[in-house]
Image (cartoon, rainbow, N blue to C red; front, side, top):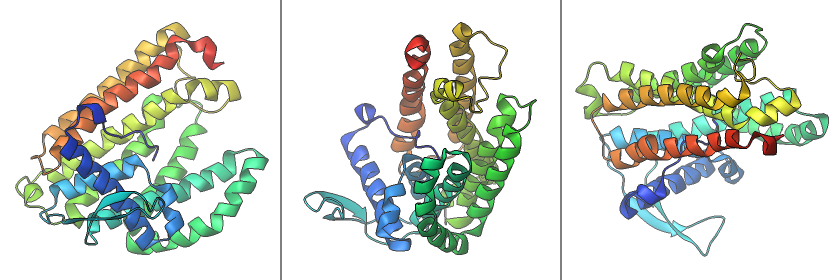
Length: 296
């Protein structure tokens, strides 16, 4: 996961932003509870969004309480007071994502960075064993994604869709788990809920991959790293429009999929992320293409 799926605070009501922050802090606390206090450093926005989606659709209501932040005792935070499957599932996704990202970094990074990653490996490996035991399906999907991504990047005929497929397929499978792991009368009302969640995860995963590729385009080009946009037969001055088109199409499909679901209690937060925060993120990333010389 890459941390691109955030909320747009400026267009979110105060009470909804407070709820989002409470879920973010709750996931941080769940990471500490399930794995280690140091696991909290791997908290990210994408996995928080996943937790929000599950908590939004779940029949179980959340009771919030106020406590002190472990890393900043002077700061008070709201937390979900009881342990939930949604938070545990999101925590497992966080840890498994970090573990496979670490393995990838060890293979692809310069030697001096590999030293640091090797030092982290025993700790993350121990947490990974716990997440594997708790939710083997999540780990299996991330493992398949990692293997598939390597093969894709080595394919000389790789195109944009092929490059994004492993991440899209992984998040599609992970979103499908929502229908299996939580009790939800909302999902039970629609016999196509699992397929809709799968589609939602697929296009959101594809968008995450594409926005990350766009964000890293100039750096990857400079260091001769794989990037699907580099292989395109498109002039650089026209590349921005191509990237924008691919991102808009993928994001619109994710929006359409979400709109097929009956809305849950945290729809305001999810809609804010999809319809406001993600388009703003696109604009921010694509602004790099307006001044390419500064990226070299």
